[in-house]
Image 1 (cartoon, helix red, strand yellow):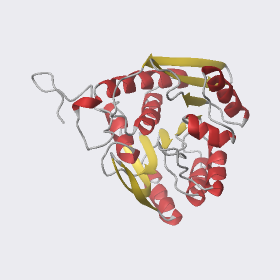
Image 2 (spheres, helix red, strand yellow):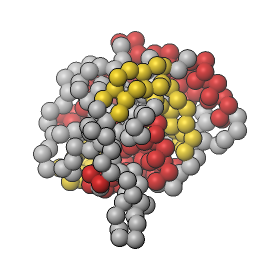
Image 3 (cartoon, helix red, strand yellow):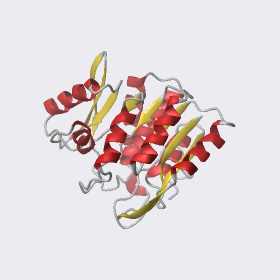
Length: 270
């Protein structure tokens, strides 16, 4: 059983909807707890309303009193109170397999959290089994400029481990024109995860989807390094087939069900 704790996306490409799709596509039953109602689609975010921490706790208590949870993926937390509440959840020890996608910086570069909330997310990072920041998010966590070279990427992965994070998948963004390069790091060392860069503008929800896919593979028994590698391979194909969906007027979603949706002619059902 997989649990996603995140905000919504009415367009279905990111947030809790993307998490549920990724879990489902990879054969893991999805449960969910909502942290924020977000007004967004493929052209951007227009606003959000954070869930009251007491109601967040009620969602948690109601779920875990009834359903076994094997793995947890955490996404948007919106404010310090919600981050601290989720930290309390993890202290209950329901599962050690926790993937945190520290949603802190928008694609535009705008900060999504204030300093108090950022500090709360930093504390939460040390309670997760794996964090999956992109370059701007890693820069915020480390309070330094974002990496611009592969060497700096490896250095920042080491620095994140030094903060007390057990494992990190540092997403390389656009450091390479031809390849998508991420760094997996734990106390045993670094592993470079490499895949072709897919030429598509339809990448909405990529970060949410990748972290959920890692959690799904972990729930199915993969080691952390293997879960990251398998998730990256699966996401590459979801990006490769994203243009077939034609959702929205902006950056459309990846194709979570690229392995499933086919008609008698071999085409996907949009």
